[in-house]
Image 1 (tube, rainbow, N blue to C red):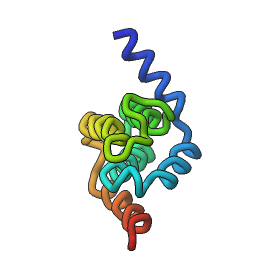
Image 2 (image 1 turned 180 degrees about the vertical axis):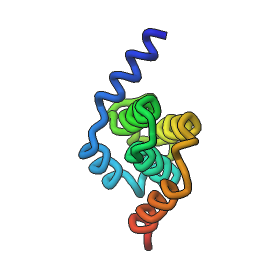
Image 3 (image 1 turned 90 degrees about the vertical axis):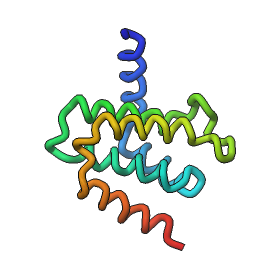
Image 4 (image 1 turned 45 degrees about the horizontal axis):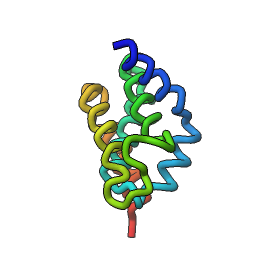
Length: 118
């Protein structure tokens, strides 16, 4: 259990808002809509004042994993590179699902529609 706690702290420490936006913009098309949508839902959920600290810590750990340049499956591998990131983001959403409401999802969809507009 101590290792999980330490890993979460390391991942949280990798998160910064600036790094998050830079990475997400850079890899959006490569990572795909599902990864981007989940990341945005988490980000916007963490911005809500009613989201408790434990949920924000979960979000920042998951987003830290996305930002981390080295992870379980290298992001440079076509098709598979973001599968582990998607799994981490999906698990985080499931964990804090109460705080990912319709307004959070709408904000994420709005941003996605801007980025993925053809």
